[in-house]
Image 1 (cartoon, rainbow, N blue to C red):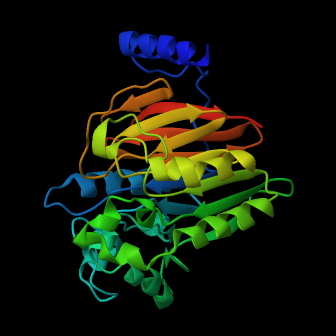
Image 2 (image 1 turned 30 degrees about the vertical axis):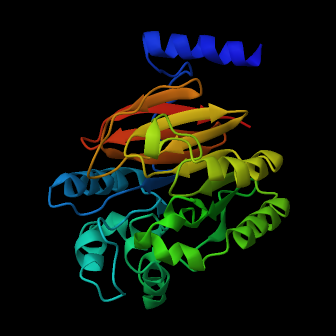
Length: 309
């Protein structure tokens, strides 16, 4: 019966398109607890990353985000060589400029970082600037108010992919122990009692794209069970260059699109919303819940969803 329901839902999605059935919430205010998620910004020789970054800065002027999370592939196509690489200036420091963006950027390793020197992203944070990345995977807690807290867990997902372990370009993943990372995730989640729990990884667990950018079976097998066991609310990812909101068994899987290159996606039975667009994600936490909005490169909100406890 469960399989039949999924097939029927798929037929509805393919016929009418994925959309949200949730009532649209009022747009966040500067007094709310706001933060942004950007992904796959890269520098591919076009102006798209600049346009997206300008909208990030423009919205930051009015919404005063507390921090920004980058969910990987900050530097296309070959990552950075070291902490002195000029891409740090071109693709980060000068790209995200403005007084409102003088805040913490929490980094995540993407697959393109593994083309270069992934450790350089950790080492760059030692310079004491905006870039914050204490380790290849790490966790932190944010206090929203006297009664509300947020647990953020950032993973290093590239080493999980078996296909990467067979490619010379990703030789660095062979040095990483995924069993150790899973044990660490289990320990962190087991001791986590925050109001909201989110996990961030470059690769999506579930993805509405067929083929190479589809579901990540290794994360479904090794990471997803722990998230369900300990009640994670959201999993944030990038990598596939589309906006996606997928929902499976109570967890909302949010995919932030690229700032430089967009792709088509294919609605599947778990797809709540998907869109071919450039942009970034706005998150806002209030007493009413945890709101996620997809903002395109023109600064337009194209989708919003609010999760309640």
